Image (tube, rainbow, N blue to C red):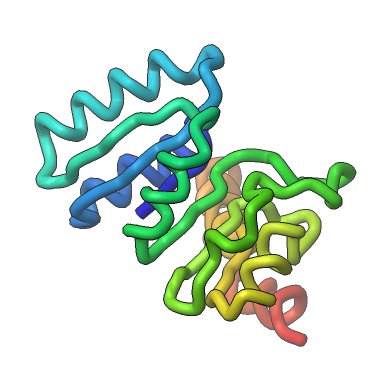
Length: 161
């Protein structure tokens, strides 16, 4: 798996993927405030799970190319491409996409980001962050109200079409 980003959503995806048995995860991030924290989390996951997590600076396109080439899943865990900047994509080189690559973008607005459009055009299976948003909302709803959110009703009303 290749994961782009090291913020809250990306970190949650990283940890859960490692706990769920993903064998190798290459994580790319710019050298920002999250980078040092990412290295610490990767070290703990490498010690405590059967997953090998490798942390990379996003600035090396050849390392990114190799990681994606060896991955079954590509996850954008950044906000690149989210409204209002819908003309942007975290992946500029669309030759990195191939039909057997699953591309997931945590972004939910727009429903289909430039990343997802480009990946779909290359034959990739794709998914956006709508279900992640829905179930995060359901968990918050339960915490705040003590009641289950009507997830099926919301899926029927907003997710079908």
